[in-house]
Image 1 (cartoon, rainbow, N blue to C red):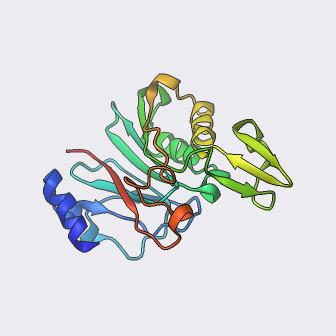
Image 2: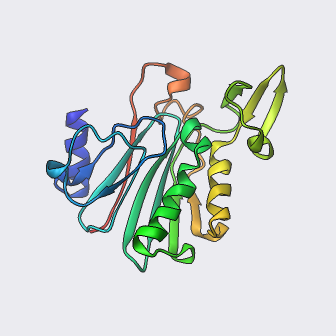
Length: 202
C-alpha cells in the first residue's frame, strides 16, 4: 500500500505528504483541511473533507462505495466525499454542499461534481433492515424484503435538491462489482483492496 501511494504521488508529481486520506467510518462528519498531512492529527475519523488550500490532494478509498468530488471554480474550494450506504442515508453529500456554502460562500451554480466507479444498481442488494423508504424511487423491489438500490442516483438527487444541475455532474458509470478486472469490490471479494481517487488544486 505504501509503495502504491508513493507511485501515485510520483506519477502525478506531488509530495506524498500533501495527500490527505481519512479513516473512513461510514458516518457524516466533514473535515476541513488547513495544511499538509504532517500537521494533521491521526486518525482522521471522517467521511468527507474539503479545503481552500492549493497543492493539497484530498483522497477517498473505496471498494463499492461512491467516491464524489466537488470543485467550486470561482471560490477555489474542493471537497471529497465517501458515500456508502450509511453515509448516503445520513445525506453526507448534501451536508458537504451546505458546508461549502456556509464556510466559504460557495454557490451551487459554480460547482463541478464528479462521481467515480462504484457498485451498480443491478449488483447492490440490501434487505428491509437497512432499506429507507425514501430510496424507493431509486430502487427495485425483489420481494421478500429485498431491494436493489442505486446509490449513485440517490446521491445525485441530494445534489439536485441543493441546486446542482445535471450538466454540472460527471459520472464514471462503471460497476466495481462487475468489472472484476479493473476494480476491488468488497461485495464480491470480502477481504480486498481499495481504489484511491483524489482531487487537488495545483
